[in-house]
Structures are given as C-alpha cells and as structure tokens.
Image 1 (cartoon, rainbow, N blue to C red):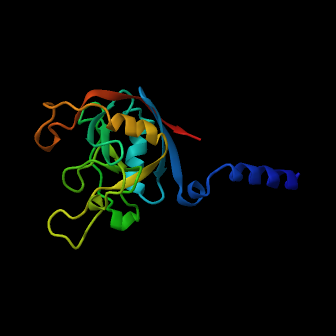
Image 2: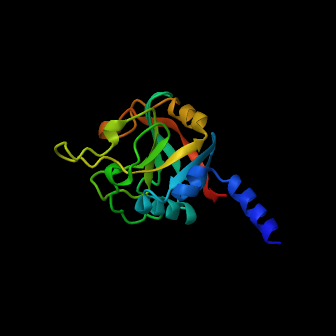
Image 3: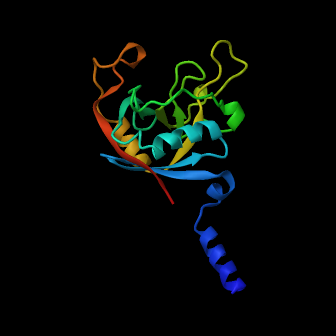
Amino acid sequence: MIRRLALLLLALFATVPAAAQSTGDVRVALETTQGRILLAVHAGKAPITAANFLRYVDERRLDGTVFYRGVGNADYGFLQGGVQNEPKRTLKPIAHEPTTQTGLTHDDGALSMARLEPGSAMGDFFIVLGKMPAMDAHPEAAGDNQGFAVFAHVVEGMDVVKAILAAPKSATAGDGVMKGQMLEAPVKILTARRVP
C-alpha cells in the first residue's frame, strides 16, 4: 500500500514542471477572442504583485476586459490590457515589487504591472516581447528608477500575443504618449482562470 502511494505521488509530481514545483508558480489561462494565453504566475518570487493579479482572476474582474494597447511589432514591444480604471473592476493600488527585489526581469514573455508612480499599480498589465532591460529597476539612475513589477511569464500562446500586437493601431485614439498605440479593434479577454 505504501509503495503504491509512493509511486502515485512520484507520477503526480513528474507531470508538474520542475520550475512550478520550486517557485510556487500558479498557472492561469487567459481565453481571448484570438486564442488562449497560458501564464505561469510567480507567486513565490513576486508575492504581492502575483497575489494582486490572482485576486483579479479569482474575482473574475478580468473577464470581459480587453487588450487595448500595442507598442512595437510582432517581434519586439509590449501588449497592454486590463481593467482600464473601470471603477467596478478596480481594486486598491498595491506596493511596488521592483525587479531588484524579485530577481525577475523584463525578458521575452514577461508580464508586468502597468503603473504611473511606484505603488500605483492596480489591474492593468503588459506582456513583453523581446528583452526590455530598460523596464527593470535601476537604483543607480536618477528619478523614478524603480522600473515595473514583473510577476509572471507566458508559457504557451506567444503566437496569440504576437498576432494581437501586430494588429492595426488607431492613428488618433489615445492620450499623450499612448496616442497612436491603441488597437483599432481591442481584443477581448473572455475569461481568466486558474488551471491545474
């Protein structure tokens, strides 16, 4: 009986990727009108930011939101989505977790929180295509040197991310630096759910 239980446990853990076992990653699937994007949310490395994102997922606050902004092209840039400060969906801002604290970086497939100043992130996030070290924290730099808070990575569905980022942008939509970066046809996030 004990041997059978041990074999069952070994078989169970063999199906879980080693990275997920060691880092406390939580899998989340974003089902969009363009396809599925599967995420590994790094709850062990970025506990504050990951918990915030998972609360948006668990309370279904991301269901029906959209990817609305794309900067760059299908090979390099970032795609932004989330609640867009919609009062019924938005939770309170969270403390900032810089990359110098988490050890995570803005590499290909990283998810990071959108923000104005440190400590203002709520329910909007972006997915990075390519490496963007300028978005990491740089404590040696002057001014706002805290960067953005990475909390997850895409593990499947980068083709979907690239297709959305390559979609046409509106020449007139958007304010300030966002002008010309808004997707002509935002892509709906149908559901965001934890998956085994």
